[in-house]
Length: 215
Ligand code: SAM
Image 1 (cartoon, rainbow, N blue to C red):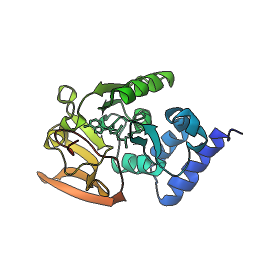
Image 2 (image 1 turned 180 degrees about the horizontal axis):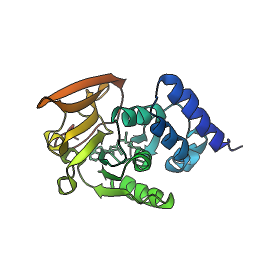
Image 3 (image 1 turned 60 degrees about the vertical axis):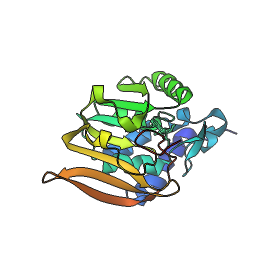
Image 4 (image 1 turned 90 degrees about the vertical axis):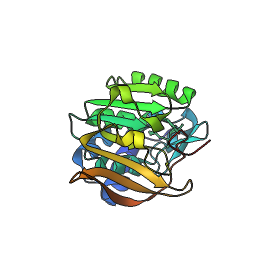
């Protein structure tokens, strides 16, 4: 029997996001609207609103709903922002961002995932996401600067190329650390210097690239 997906999404927002301290009303609204079940493999549709990441093929994952919400909240998104996401994956985080900001740019390095995300975002009628197939550890210099950069894969350090593509008030959010365990970090400029804030531990698949982990 197929579960009630709308009720499952409502419960996800209430029990996984609000109950854990996500307070940004726009983030909660976006996650209440975006059909996460469209972005998971068909055989996992009944688990789309589970409190967990899920496999999407090619050894990659769609992130846990709470992590999507936390990264979106920590980014302090404003409607006029231009946002770069590194690691399109399923396209779900990009769809949430598309609901929240003016323009989203998202880079993926696995061709099949890039193509699938393009199709799914199109099917959902989302037109303010621009996708690119390349090594996102180098950013997207032609489209820079960005108000926010979200890195949705684990990185051993903050790629210099990404910092160079932020606006002066820009924020970069990334899971930084070892391949097995990272800290969620927000980097912004304060009095002309880079300022780091930490938002707990997390586990992401690796960013494989010139300024990420080696393959
Ligand atoms: N944000 C995604 C979503 O909403 O489904 C989840 C991202 S998944 C945790 C990490 C993604 O980063 C994978 O799809 C992986 O292929 C991609 N990735 C890894 N290294 C990359 C790189 N150098 N450039 C772009 N994407 C990369």
